[in-house]
Image (cartoon, rainbow, N blue to C red):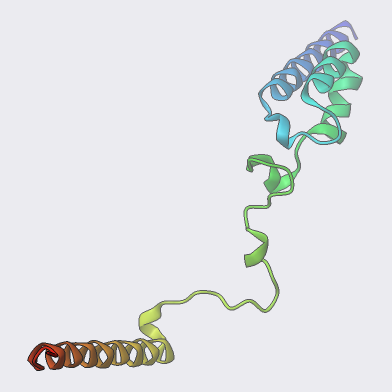
Length: 128
């Protein structure tokens, strides 16, 4: 029985030390419910109950744990909209390529027209 009590005490102490280190190293912006200093005090002063409180109510959850700010799930909200078309390879999109060709042709025509007008202005004699 003495061995079990000692092992349990060591396990709880290790759990508490791990929790204290985790609270200290967790970015304050990702903590839930309370500021960082408050969590540090709760975990240190309340020992195992404080450590359990951190794991239940303070520790960042899921994917948000590795993100830089609260509420970030790694995907910007404008990309998370239902029905939003996803980007694909532009070389595989015939409509996109046709649009590019039409735009390039329009730009060529505009440049040729401007060059023609410029040559025409240069060929005209200056007014007297």
